[in-house]
Image 1 (cartoon, rainbow, N blue to C red):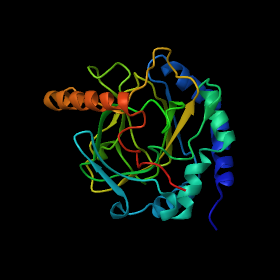
Image 2: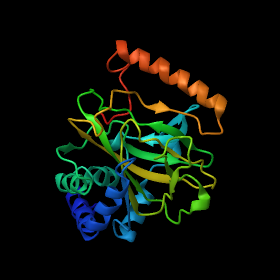
Image 3: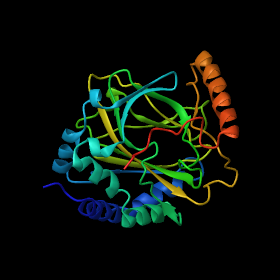
Image 4: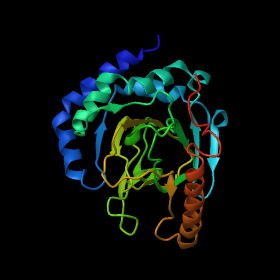
Length: 272
């Protein structure tokens, strides 16, 4: 029998509560740049292996390949194993949201049932995600995106496999913090106009599987935050690519001045 989202949420809350003071300390020590915390062994290992085994094959997902990124996504959750939907929405349980918000010293935080830019992410060999800022808002531009939750479920993932989360708290001219996409690890990080992050190129013949959620608020994290599209840059050594991506950012930002929700509706959302 598939565990319900309520049952999974209860397990998540229990684990977060057991480490709450440490997680608050992690976040407090980083919040002035790109606030984040990391917690391992979030759920029982046997259950996480079950989650991993239910992930769709890459052939049953949507490929996103450009200068900006190379990865595969899945978000129309009724097309996949029911367990995956239960896990994703367990992170949207009010008790989980409220506890994560408390750890991050935030108030009035909301999940996104539409999974706008969330859901499942799969990355195989040579896949990557260039440094970027997440889109500042939800799909209707009503609320500000404030937290990014990334839960990794591929067994035995090592640093040498690549595909690791990189956070750039000092900007793109300085070295990033690299966080291994370790099995059964949850990373929660802030998202605002300075929260540059990326995923290093996958080096192993394996698939890095991640469950992604975003939390939103009626107010931005930084008083200086303004609306922005998902904004990509090149890595420090990618000078030509960086120039091309900045042109791309300018064009897409310009279009959003005339089309509030874009030229077309972003298809990356769960149509229930």
